[in-house]
Amino acid sequence: MTVPRPGARGRARPVSRERPGQGPTRPEQPRTTPFAPRPIVEGMTTIETSTSTGQEPPPVREWPVIDLEGTEFDPVLAGLVREGPLTRIRLPFGEGWAWLATRYEHVKLITNDPRFSRAEVARGRVTRLAPNFAPRPGSLAWADQPDHNRLRKPIAGAFTVGAMKRLRPRAQEILDELVDGIVREGPPADLVERVLEPFPLYVVSEVMGVPETDREQVHAWTRQIISLTGGAAAADRAKNGLYGWITAIVRARARSAGEDVYSMLAGAVARGEIGEEEAVGLAGPLQIGGEAVTHNCGQMLYLMLTRPELMERMRARPAERGPVLDELLRWIPHRSTVGLARIALEDVEIAGHRIAAGEPVYVSYLAANRDPALFEDPDRIMPDRDPNPHVAFGNGHHYCTGAVLARLQLELLVDTLLDRLPGLRLAVPPEEVRWRQQTMIRGPRTLPVTW
Image (cartoon, rainbow, N blue to C red; front, side, top):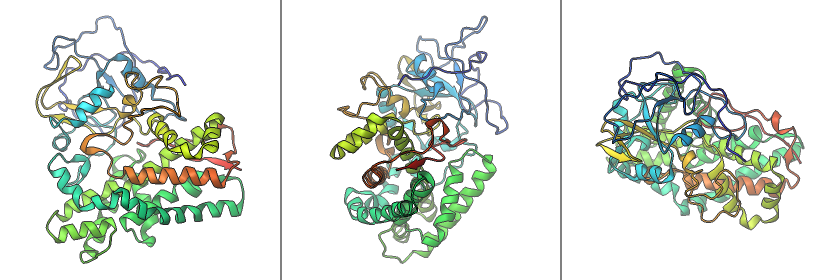
């Protein structure tokens, strides 16, 4: 597959004169200005700033809201990658601009370097994808060391390889019940509705300790939180509902000896290791994590269902499915735009540019996973790629806490569906598969199949 070139090209935007995070206050409405790669505009000037080390600073690019179909690589990101290893962007919400690193070596450097802080982001209003921004105490995503280790320690035991071995039989039982249902009713079936949505919801609920009576409501909240529909008001309502529920359950399990995450957090609060507010902030993103499995596995299955050679490989060589899943994790576009920002705590030079203290920086794991310096023919899916040092689950101390849980679910889903439904295929033409719109995590909305 060739990375698509950007589509619509709008007028070039002059380089921003404002400092990052200090732009004029704008209404929280998404910008939809089209991206224009490598613009040449008569009369356009470049302003020298503290970010320059002899090189002209890159222009600030608008990164608009784009709903992409299928597994297309984001054309805006593709354009930014072509511009250079370090560019500057403005996302739909927030203020100012931010640096963007797209090369593998720079992504690894920034995510391992304590000079770039997540905690400092909470003090400002950086440009961002989400309509609202309210970091909570305890959230691992916004913690630097040593706080990060302190917060992670109480729940680390729930996400070990050993814990996954103990969970595997129960997860398989949950999945078998779901697949039994579609087999009993016969084809066609929507895999998203019948399997890909409920399975991660039930498994994450088992790990977290969510009562069965509350699972659908919790799922409704987490689904809204990752959506861009409804704006800040809808996201705030969902967050308030979810975090209020988490507060109540942590309090209710203060004396629990259970091995679920909420009992572990309640115990840590009782022992004075973390505060209640930190426990709640820590639990929220873990609860939301099941949404990513739904969408990412949906993309993987779509690729297998639309690429006969890939499906045949997976069916013919089941013992070698693991490396293929790694390659699909590297290749699929996990999310829209970028993740979470960091703030430079001091001046840092990268790729010939000085990132000044106080300036926000994003990294693109998607772009890093397509870096030709690390991956031969990076835009092609190569099932036998070895080595495959992808960063689909992140890097550094912010490496995904639930990576082993996500991997377990992906393996079970692919193995079970391919083994129990040997004739699995799309029930509609590929172009009729509907994709999620206005969401931070990409994936099919429906996946109609027959067998």
